[in-house]
Amino acid sequence: MTQSHFLISAPASNSGKTTLTLGLLRALTRRNLKVQPFKCGPDYIDPIHHTEAAGNQSINLDTFMSSNAHVQALYEKYSAQSDVSVTEGVMGLFDGAQKMDGSSAAIAELLGIPVVLVVDARSMAYSAAALLYGFKNFYPQISIAGVIFNFVGTESHYRFLQDACADAGVEALGYLSKNSALAIPSRHLGLHISAETDYEQIIESAAHLVEQTVNLDRLLELTRVNINPGESSPVVSVKEPGSRLKVTIARDEAFTFTYHQNIEALAGLGHITWFSPIHDHVLPETDFLYIPGGYPELHAAELSENESMRASIKAYCDGGGLAFAECGGLMYLGEQLTNAQGDTFEMAGALPCSTSMLHSKMVLGYRTGNWDGVQFNGHEFHYSGFTNNSLTADNALITNARGIETDTKLYRKNNTFGTYMHIYWGETQSFLENLISKSRQPTANSR
Image (cartoon, rainbow, N blue to C red; front, side, top):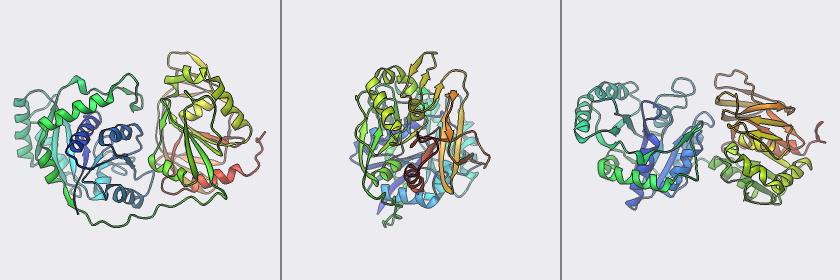
């Protein structure tokens, strides 16, 4: 079965990978092709935009948070029925947790898919030859299929860039011109979802430009790969908790940071119900409450004003219900949240802590945890910090990518667990199993 597979990467961040990827996804979908998007790394927001552009769920591929075998299995599973598989890289092509480890290049090599470079050409002409030659020859284990230039001023500018490509031995596949209509707003965690932004219009505009100035036929031809369809590696299932659970997950403007495979694992526990801490009045009946990360600081007023929901969640947690909250979810379960403007809002009050966006610093990096012998991986990225913290840490040691212990903790009160770490349990669900097991054991601070 012949399909086109490629990974969009760049020499550095902010080269326009996401804009080009969205334009390509929509332009290829317009050709009545089934397009499967993927995202390298731990990002939550790019996959949301991918899914809108392609009409298919985008899947995270991360070789730090999961094994190589798991990444291969995911790619095989979700690309099997597609005509084109498009993977957006992370940071620069060779940037990983340590050197190349976990980088876009490492994933391209693992999956055997060619790379299409995106090069910011705003202040560049023939010098692009040296850049492209270096990227083509630095690591022969990956294949650079071609390059698409971004922020090109004029057609004559592009001709200079084509000359550079010819001498570097890298095929020029087209370009995108400077266009303010393609600007996607960003925040401290990268791109974000904003009600004020018309993402559909941005995607449509990007697709229109791609169709005009990128050689899609040649792109598909250069990236065609023979695939031997076979069964993907089986996904490890969660051990039956004794009875099917009612799993309730927060999802609205404030809570959007979820991994698709995490949700798939939770679906293995029982029936999933989605709810909104902003718009709904009370927490649905549940056995397992999951509040993922997001941007609660942008919606602190609305979250605070929904007093019935706050009271409902506090009552559930105080009553010993099983709950897990990460990053933004942890902030919401605390007592108060102070936003970047210095305004303080009452939160759910289920956990004895308060958080603030003021006078805090960025915390960023991969994390590995050991919780009573249970290994788990994830990622941490936030600017908020505790203003007061009377939380009790459970017996979990969390280290960074180099094995150095961090200040990150896994907290517990009653059967409510919270952490600033975003945990990936899509491969091995031992973390979930331990969470359920712990919730059935008495604890010193249970009341």
